[in-house]
Length: 239
Image (cartoon, rainbow, N blue to C red; front, side):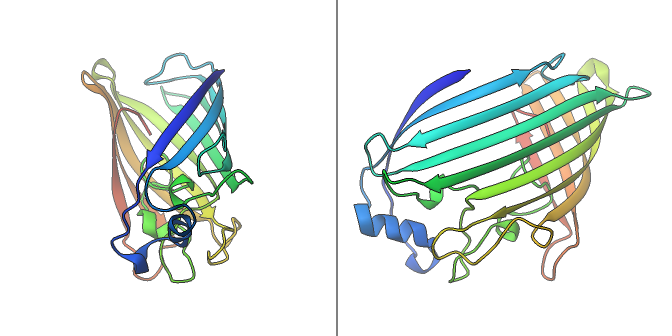
């Protein structure tokens, strides 16, 4: 169990008001754009039985984080993020890996919930193959905004490629969605209609400089105007 206190002081400079999220415009209107204070406490509970951190072959990694902001300052919210993950050996050195993650954040009576404290699904720790703007909620003006709830799951089949160099290859399937019920947001829920999916392949390398991951995801059910997929690169972690 880890418990910490977070302090942040932010200045907001709105250069394009027509493209700014509604929550940011409302925040500046209510508290100004200088020295916007967030004071929060955060607790994280972790359960980790992996045999090793990189090139894991068995075990589980579960984590739950709760954050409360509102001990003074201008920002107030309750945020919860949970994840579960399992690794299990299969045949011929193949490893199965399943991971799921979900989160919720809501404004409380102690302050305002700005867009930068909402969730954005992008990068290796989400739906590989999608750009941020393709899956994020939008406000009534069509501008991309953060979500107040999200969920995704991914299943991987991993196999060592060059064991002596710490290089593993994998294929994956992912599905998930993000939604918002914030004022001014276009109605969007997490259900069968909003779930997006991708499949792909990649490599994890435990290099001398630290872990490096590279993957390409192909969209399933690609919509008009979307690309076929995209690359994701991560330094400091694995997919």
